[in-house]
Length: 71
Image (tube, one colour):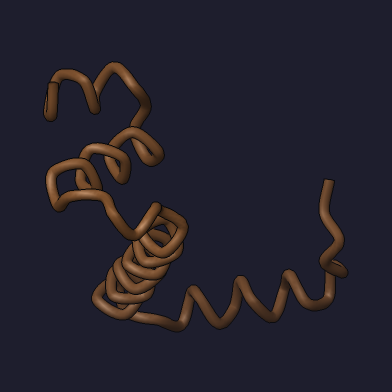
């Protein structure tokens, strides 16, 4: 399902195609960092640093990887 018109999709495709690989990679990195900040801001304030890292890992990659990486 999409709520974006085909005209806007074409504009976006053309804009992304005009970007260099570096520009696209930077945009992806910025989007990932924003997603991390959103998740971290949703965690309880009293969590320790290790707990925060584990929960961030769990939310992005799932319980199995979080358990392996952080116990």
